[in-house]
Amino acid sequence: MRYAAAVLLLTSLLARPLQADELTFEGEQLETNLGVGYAVRLIDMNGDDKLDICIVDQRRVLWLENPSWTEHEILGDGQTSPDNVAFAPYDINGDGQLDFALAAGWGGGQTPRGTIQWITSAGSKDEHWTVHPIRIEPTTHRIRFANILGNEKPELIIAPLFGQGDREAGVRLLALEIPAKPESEAWPVHLIDDTLPVMHNFLPIDFTGNGQTDIISASYEGVHLHERQADGTWKKTQLGIGDQESRPSRGASEVKVGKLADGGRYIATIEPWHGNKVVVYTKDKDQPLHSLWKRHVLDDQLRWGHAVWCANLDDDADEELVIGVRDDESDSTRRGLRLFDPIAADGSKFQRTVIDPGAVAIEDLAVADLNGDGKADVVAVGRQTHNVKIYWNKTQ
Image (cartoon, rainbow, N blue to C red; front, side, top):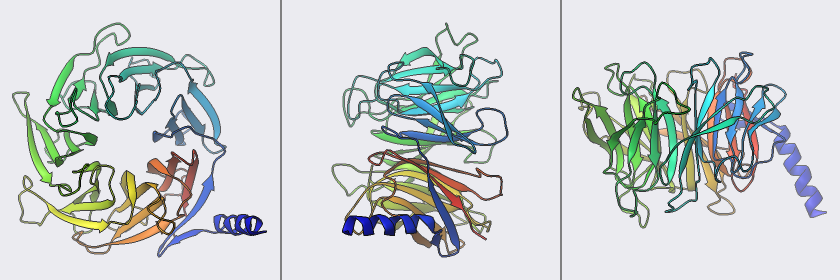
């Protein structure tokens, strides 16, 4: 009887909109079952001007077709070394069709594995794609395409989790050029940095406003800005100190940049690495860009924060901070989706709202308008929960 009552209560809760003060979201769980939903992106996969849900799963790559959410598997078990961990979309071979760069061979911790390849469509949307190897780079954890060299094509930016041979060794943050014949030629390698240990993520962005793409990194040493100089070398500047008191993990993991109502920006992280704190960094108007920004802890009641996004959810002057929490801290402090709304124009104060606690052990999330109503929706993919859930933005 207790079980039946609990199911009835859960069903009624899921049927109701999930409210966050002025924000209103309605959850929809999709039928797809995941191993580990390591990464999710919202991409138009079939040219119908609707964003589909693309997921890198533990042993496969798939996409869910908007609006039916029919599953299409484009990479199957055995085509790459498990686990698939990250991907980046781009037309790599210039044939007008979208391809993916894919990081696989993920073993967690320090492992000599780490394969980088690119995959291309074999024809029908229901056929498995063809795999082309690029290189081995141990513990590759995050990859993105970004034009940092000013060439005709963007480069594939690669961030391993650990340095080679030592947890405290510097990570090789690399840029790989796409060659003229990507199927058969080696991809030229450019070193951006090799001094920062345990780099969990990075963000390509024109942070300085000079028209050139920079890199913001989150590592054991905190948050850093990487700028390419005229002579081709890279300058590194620390912007955030990270959590340097916690042990054994420290620093920061995940990083995004959001917009504030006063026209400024905030840098959002999880601290320490795989940590229990949501942190933002802000800068005073008269403070130099290349200096340590002010650190604000927004939340320290979470366990293993693992996804960060900045997006305007309510059509106001600023961008909200969207956080995915992977693990339960306690029976009363659950994993799932949390929103942080700036309530001070300068970013010194945010208001927290917990959405649908316990429903998704969020490994990754993405934010975009999925149904064309002009409102940003949230897609979360789970680890222990093995699920995919859309949070539809119903804010009036």
